[in-house]
Length: 153
Image (tube, rainbow, N blue to C red; front, side):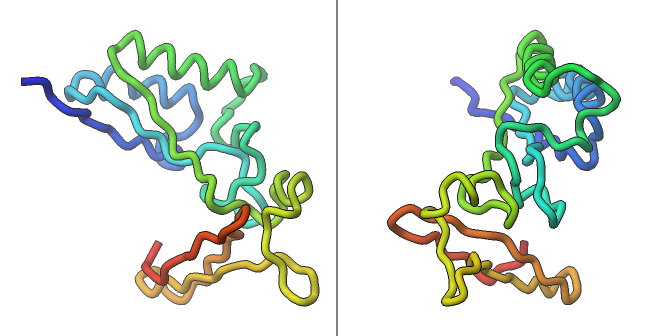
């Protein structure tokens, strides 16, 4: 019987820069995983949250390490190393919300709901399990709006 996907979650903030991600590949393969799921690694906006993406076309500087190579080359190396070990790579592409200062805010203003003063609406979620932190992120929409639940992040 064919086995389904066995997915290893690589959390970039814990794993470090991309060169460190590559160091994890042999261990992940040895544990019989066949996919690596990577949480958001794109450039973040002013909040610094991995889920408040500023640019989908740039790598978060925290994950570049000291390399001067292009973002695409760094990511490609990781994906190729994983493939050589028999692992697929999938990413958490956060498309239903962005940072306040996201490139998309200026490029596609019509995708964002605004209040009466013209400011972008931010949905705020209070996460009681982490204390009284207000976690605000921008939800964008085209024709319909995504609604955010009050569940803990």
